[in-house]
Image (tube, rainbow, N blue to C red):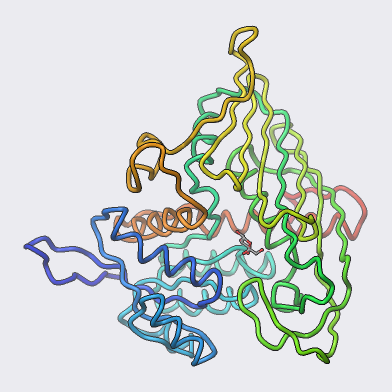
Length: 399
Ligand code: SOE
């Protein structure tokens, strides 16, 4: 699958990755912004083109095409993925559409980027991975927090052995946007569309970070709760907001509002995971702490530029968690942005992940994290669900 050769600019031929994007709400906006920033900040040896934006509502789509800088709008994703003037398809549609779009786009030889969770089921995720591999296309899943420089530093310190043998991983993803029972049943609360609630939407991120930084959860046991079991059916929704008519009919909520679980990792470390949308006061608080024999690390997305590091090698009287500002040129991606000390934010993690995805396409190498990481995450998600049903530990490897 060749890439277009843009018109030589000053005699330098650039390859251009031409994107189709499915979805223009919250994640579609984040991805549109990211694709627009790559050329300006990441100084790539390739171009990135926002060619076709796809969405169901013609009016909303036309507005998004204009505001997010896309060349065209398309209401039929099947027509879009069949186009021969696209190299990559980026899927930010609700989770129930991930597999069907990815399978068809792969069959048309399109490189694939897909938001998390990979699919509604482990089986669908496996089918997406198999199709991408069979059709020889690059594939990457949107675990964007891996691309925060502070998380990359945590990975580097762990790989260097700076915190030694790991005993604990503690992951939290706390939100509170649906604590009001009158908040309507948007797609993230509809089991048929989202598959799960906080578990797949938020838990997926902390599971992925645990796998990225600590190891493989080998066995898990969990519990969950749906605190509000019915909500007004939604008229119109966007991202995390929604509006329901005063006399809207009510619909059952069958997804989890909170899921907590324990894990034993393959390397003997212990893990605790909490994903909830009912943590009053926490709008989007994702954090983790890792404790080892030689030190500890703490990360909190609300302080996304910082990594807290406790180094047991520090002398008596000088020990304590130090705060490392990961805003200097030596930290991954930071030299692309601003001078030392100027912080970046949540949206920059999307720029970094999509930049790496484009590089994998242009340089012909596997993208990371690939769909295989999404499948591994889905195995943990499903093992936890099984453990809740069985009220017993479940071995992840068996799935
Ligand atoms: C909604 O809970 C959401 O947008 C998630 O879907 C994202 O993955 C997370 O980063 C922010 O919150």
